[in-house]
Image 1 (cartoon, one colour):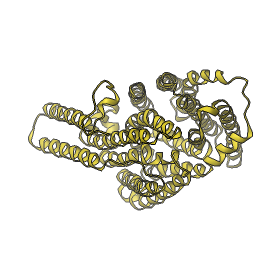
Image 2: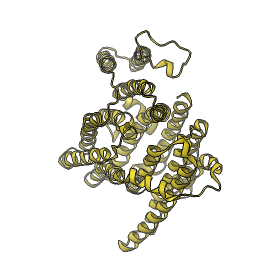
Image 3: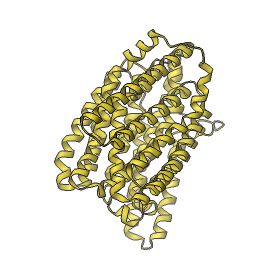
Image 4: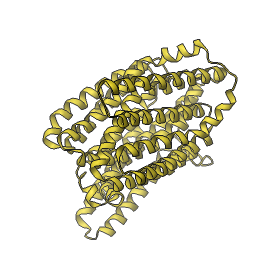
Length: 466
């Protein structure tokens, strides 16, 4: 947990620096064009290869490690080639700019190879390798992206730099695949991967489309000069939640699934209870942090002019990604404990339908605020469906008492800090008091939720902790 959280935190800080530097180098409009390009790449990745990563984790068994890894690698390679051929064909058919098509292919291939390689190391519990790959991705994306923009400050060049950065970051995990030299892929494991993962093909692609609808509409109705700041703020906030969420999933869900595979259900449930409490703390205090400090953070990172174009959308994103946190990193994990891959497709459809309807209704009139609201409603609907239906398929433990206490603590903190903002005149003093209260409330909540022992193993659990 410490290694994953530490590496993700370092990676997130580096990503924030990268976004801030890239956005300043090419400006709101050109960065908005890059965001649109990246959105299309994410959709292609969602339909093309993202499902394989989850299918591999779902069918992975340590006793069949070699043949599963070999089959997984071959499946990924075939998919990358197939998608590349399709994209080149579509580029010719639709008369798309060649540089645009190749940049999409490079982004898709870079993400796919990086994620596939890291996933193998994750399932093999090679924590140091995964952590190194995460840090390398941040470093190489920044260096290659900066170099590309120095050569030519365009969205296409930035896309190429980012894709090469992903490929270089995959090297530590790819080197660990030498352990499987000489092991041939087999038809049976490949069929098992496809059988497990085919419902996810549509679900991840549809979900990626749903996450991009607001961006397409903001670009259409307001323009790329607003989409640039809108996308930067959304990506930075999502990344912040993902740091904690992926740390929880990588460290705790992986262990819980292994316990379940070994028939140690009580131990698996105990780990999942800790995972639930950790996700609730991340969602509640993450939203509180951004409501209180978001505007100041983005002004420092992006500059007043750039951040000012995104004014008013931060609270909507804060709640939206709180819902995403709970759904993605806890309730959606049910697919690994039972045959429920189709649930992801249902959730994706609900998310796309809800966010699309609200985006179409709100974005033309309210611009970026309308787009952010539609994203919040979509994530909220997806969370409800995931929590309600997922528990009918497999009962993941829920600590209701802890959840109520955590959200109450966050609510009291938020109310107190907002009240202080009406009383305290000095902005520096106000920020200092709010930051101190936030840190104190967070540490108290982590202690009461018995989460400190995740990073301090020698700490004795609370008397009533499970």
